[in-house]
Length: 410
Length: 214
Image 1: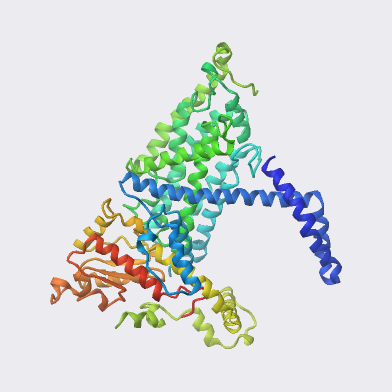
Image 2: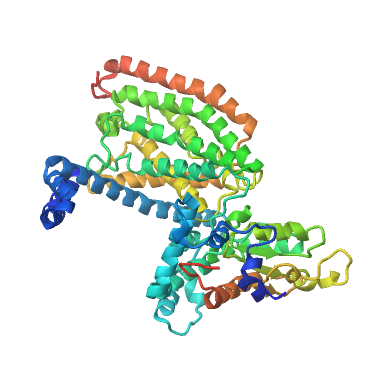
């Protein structure tokens, strides 16, 4: 049973039991209302309408799973950061809901500061998010009002789009595009336009510098990123995430151990991890929002829910970047049997994210003048060397047939 | 001027130097029936007014407020993001409060560098005459709802510089202060207690309404 199959069953049920009867009722009710209702009823009863409805369900389920992961990633970030600094991090407990219950019931307030702060802090995200809704939305007087509003829309929508593009396993996928990874990388590279737009529209020099830095970063890291992915595409012969993971599942080397792509293409793996870190703008490549240099970078003038959604979108991009790295190099959802493949996939993704959080509190930020040098002079040759290694490997592996086994793709 | 006076007064809440808002201009224009066409912002204001009037007339506003007020209040008081702004020695104690011994991140505090993204302004030191307009600007750049904590004797009353020619005698002479934390300098525990007191104050005083109206 795939996710789409499940959604199609649900769509058939809802169309048959709920949507079509309601529209039929409206068709028979009164002539003026019957024109769109009748056509809609026919459409929902047909195959096309059910498939469309099933896609809507599938995309919404994938979106909900991604948003749940987003909450977990933000929580992990804050707690692990605190633990690295020998602190405890946010401790807002579920018991704080008792105060909410008192207020909703209109009872006299009681004060339990000790009880409120004795949990694991998973409620903290909820409090931050709801607070951001209640804050005032400020548009600076001299800002370009249209672009000031368009910047967040470009950035956030292109980031949320990422959530439904990568599959969690071969059965749990909202998108089955044959060029899946190309679409993901295209969606990744829309965001710097939003960054540049909002940085320019804020009419603030720090926002402007942040936006320009984001563009410079895009120029220096996009090319090695895609070249380091080319080796994987050569081996798998496809852009489809399912094909790439199948190739890694079938390839074996010494003692029949699985040969995930990070073993033969270790150079490409390193280059890809550095570049995807720059792509999702995490430390040490968070130049566009360098807190020590630019006030808050390109988000300086944004307040309220816009700022909170920017923050959330960055974590979504981080999650999607880790998912792409897992699919390309860490074998995706391949793993021993008793654990379901979706859990294997999420375990590998969270491993990468925790590794990134450790990096965040370990290394200093890269300098602006070093970033082009690193991208063009070091990472680009390394990724070309990686492609050469892959071509060489594909050519000579029949001579080592007893050790290495690659599935035939060409 | 008392803190409550500024909070309750829409003229002062809007801050210095602000022009009349579009909504007020439209209010002067005339009744809704006289308009032939609406600009987009006029339409938004018209919808705003219509929703407000309808919800007020049907009593729906009371019902919605009764549910949303505790939820928004809960979120506001458990997620105070202070401005990362230090003046003098109390700023060292503010940093110490974030350090491992007194981990103020437990209370959900995140120091943000931009006033646009903050809820709480901590005045931690003597405000000299040159700093006062800048501090006022920082306060006005923060989005509503916002609170101010006067940390230490200098921010409360001028402290040791109470009769100086260049130091303002307390932050509450030019901006509304919600919580005063005495001490010279303030201990990190006292700062944490100040934030808990601010929580208490938000829960009791702040309406946190769904449909706000000045």
